[in-house]
Image 1 (tube, rainbow, N blue to C red):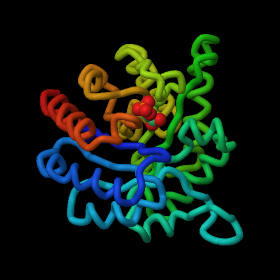
Image 2: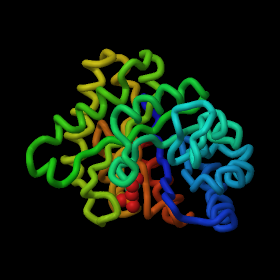
Image 3: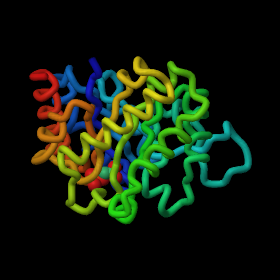
Length: 257
Ligand code: PGA
């Protein structure tokens, strides 16, 4: 059985003070949420303070990006080792905003996945098609290539520990969520690609999150799909109450399954 994972991607939001307040508001839900793994992804300036505020709780901390090199002349970048040093467990890799605005490719994502594992972090690897790609009927080509190229060269054990986030770009921040069936079809397709790549056993253990305008009102329906193992949540993770509400819902759905 896969434990669902609900992760907040705060993007470029929240100062250190605001971030600390937000996660302090999640401590209660983390005590009652045993059937769901909770992760928060603050901006890099708040990682250390958030990790300190969450020490001793079951909530993990994710960075939103990293560089693949261990150190050196890479102005503005941070390494896996530095993220582990401030208390990160996860790192979000190749979010569509990084692909769209900052030149992230499947190739750089692959280097980052290897570097994450090498440095002791677990990757949350984002994939997903644009609206043009969906309407042009090339969703499977695009997402299949993202999965294959991104995970290339990982060991079976590393692939099994990778969290994949399926985030259709047209659903991110738009209020337009993929339907349960659209999301389930994409997740089943991704699991099939993983099975080709690393075998059925690995594919069955990889957690595949849905992301894109997920919120307390639609998460239960999404989670009822057999291949949806949690969510990567943007806007609705920026308030402790709505993220906590989603954690309770995900836990309830997974307990009932
Ligand atoms: P959203 O963002 O929930 O605000 O659509 C999701 C994401 O980009 O990870």
